[in-house]
Image (cartoon, rainbow, N blue to C red):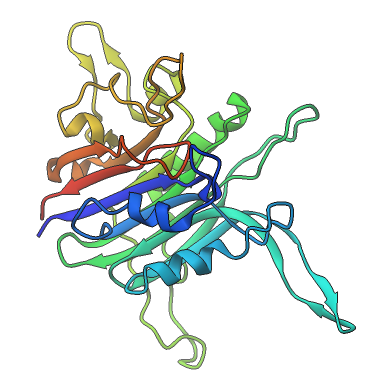
Length: 296
């Protein structure tokens, strides 16, 4: 069985024609075999009153009823109103989502480093880390991330945090651990914190950016990009593509830019068999990406 992954910055469902259509988003994620087994989404919002967007998390989940899901907002502000003299509790949220064919054993929404700016609209970014017990690769950490697009200083801190999390997450441990004094507090066993990890999402840097080198490794003048034995690897390159090829944020008159990525820990590198960009998708300003992993 091949494990199929997908990632899509959905731009709150707004397509290249300016129309919001979550049905189109879900269709873009279907390559003819149904949706991928594990899906990372970015720019999913709830209750943006300026756009009257509703609850996109619930709407996407309703369109994929066979999948488990978690959501992690970076923006979380009041969107309540008084109805019949009582508060209608509602939050405007903007963040990342993970959907899985199998139960999500645990999740952590990581708030990424951010530097306050005076002259630019600057969003709080997050990384949603999940642990999923897959039939093909056992327990995996599968993450959906959206890195900063405004401040390179902010993004540099986020990259350092993400790299440390992917490679040393086992040192931090799972969402809970240790010896319980009472079974009343937790009925489930301690969740695993596997070394095998995948992070997908809109990273807002292309391979020619120093951020790519900082995350993955340097370039040998004689032999090209190095892959660290205990580091992260680019699934696009592992699948046989040139690292400079591909375009996930097409713009007329602009050179191609691959800024949506799938990075895997080195222990998963031999499993990568294919990676594709959904070039015909129209549901967002970004293109979805798809990755296939052979069983261990």
